[in-house]
Length: 395
Image (cartoon, rainbow, N blue to C red):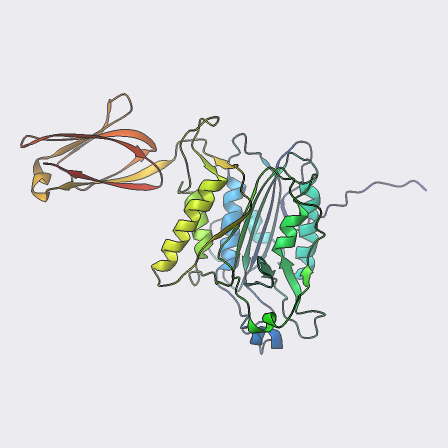
């Protein structure tokens, strides 16, 4: 009987079908807000009640917003175009209502154990289709830490009474990362794990808790770069705005979409771009600052292979929201401001308009302030996105 060879890779959750014709970027996004055995779903299971696992209001929304940015991102070399994107979401009722994203993302399958297990293994197989591939992973939902450097994402059907093990419907992110760190895995990888990493008292009573969705871990150390950015440190919580985004996702989108992690042209890259290190550094600071405004503590934990890497390149120069203030205040009505480009040509003029608020392309500018009663003020500034303030002091 004649046989037919079939493609073993599952297309579950595929927003962008697999393309193995050339090296590309493979993406997996998982967001879990609904917990079918949680405290919000009827009585809740015994484990979900003991660990206080209830529905979230922002995880699926955060995941779909991150997926939408990755889907719309323009791939400027050396960033590779999308070769596949898998998205699994478990939103609560109306969580995604009115969210302005690509409509394909709204048809994503549920993030339960069976679906995640299938999609994650298919993602690994797709990533291994070419050594020069790139990989991007973003997951968000309830989490727990069961080992010193562990991070486990709880899936939609987590905590069912009668489950074969406590962490049955859960995804082991550390073993997932290790599964692609070998000689057939993508050279460049970026991992974003947006979950709590506290340790319930019950976890402390076990030497080892087996996770339902885990992976074989080959000899590691073969990827060229692979930052693993966790939203919080060992034993700590991650936070989110109720009905909004997680703090970590909001900081990520600020860093990516608003240019908060952009760095200027540096050899060999002539455009504004984002590196793995600039992403780690600036997202960490942004998360800490956002949490502190609400009297909370959240510290991003960078790990994995932190070798130099490029995550994103801007096809157009990012913009900067510039604010220029003047002292003394009594000089405001008679002082004018000129902004000069690198050739000292005037690009913008403001007459007795203080504080000056304007938007310019990132780069080097000269700030020139003139007032008949004061010496001329001139200062060269390097303006980086997304915003910068400068105080002019006339004397």
